[in-house]
Image (cartoon, rainbow, N blue to C red):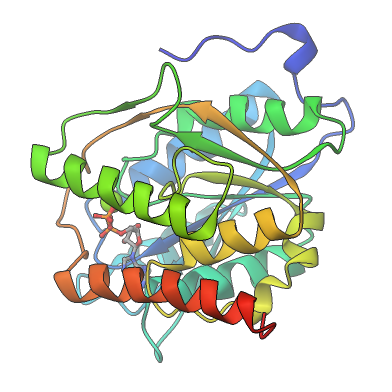
Amino acid sequence: MTPTPSAALRPEPARPRVVCTLPTYNEAGNILALVRSILELEAQGIDVRVLVIDDDSPDGTWKLVEEEARRERRLFLLHRTQDRGRGRSGRDGFVEALAMGADVVIEMDADFSHQPRYIPELLATLAASEGRLGLVLGSRAVAGGLDADRGLLRQWLTKCANLYIRLLLGVPVKDCNSGFRCWARSTLERIDVASTFSPGPAIVQELLFKTARAKIGIAEVPITFANRLHGASTLTLRLLFQGYTTVLKLRWWSLIGRI
Ligand SMILES: Nc1nc2c(ncn2[C@@H]2O[C@H](COP(=O)(O)OP(=O)(O)O)[C@@H](O)[C@H]2O)c(=O)[nH]1
Ligand SMILES: [Mg+2]
């Protein structure tokens, strides 16, 4: 269980506006329950909205969200019909969240791998840093963190990818593949999130690299990463390979001053 944050770690009294961005592709089995459990955080004093970025999912995820958003004013949908991709959706989600006036943006997967119960601690860590941190991530790789339930092969792949990325990009982070992250608005603006180029899941490493390179403070909070609740992973060997080459590209581009 997550430890209850100490009084010193509670979010500041001036409530920051929090927007949770959820990119979705065929998450009909998860999305509404996840949205509800995020919005329930309001009971803990968090000013929270949810933005779903759906790539015209064949299973109708966007329709469920559209209907729910008619009743729930804190839920928003970005229905994309072109240029499908986890990275492109992530980028558009960040840009939209900033346009919605977010002070803090939480990005997370829409499959319950990233559990809403950790959000208060991510927010509290960012707030307690009083500007020293610009990114707090949910981490499987620090003391108290766990990669639960996934197959050994998948855990091993995650570990190898992590080592490769840390060595190549030199980022001061233990879990470089975590897509459960809490961003200060100022960080997204400084790294010019609108210019993100990764079409696929490598957006996670691209934004991490740009943040570390801008010398913005990053902290890791332990989480248990759970297996997805419903549906199937979109990760393919092609996407995995694309991720590895994107990391090389990032290193090269930063060496020649292109980014
Ligand atoms: N909008 C959008 N979301 C995507 C796409 N691919 C994956 N996602 C979402 O990105 C998150 C992570 O994807 P997932 O398949 O769980 O990858 P895994 O956690 O690496 O197995 C989930 O919320 C997916 O629904 C895509 O092409 N477009
Ligand atoms: Mg997942």
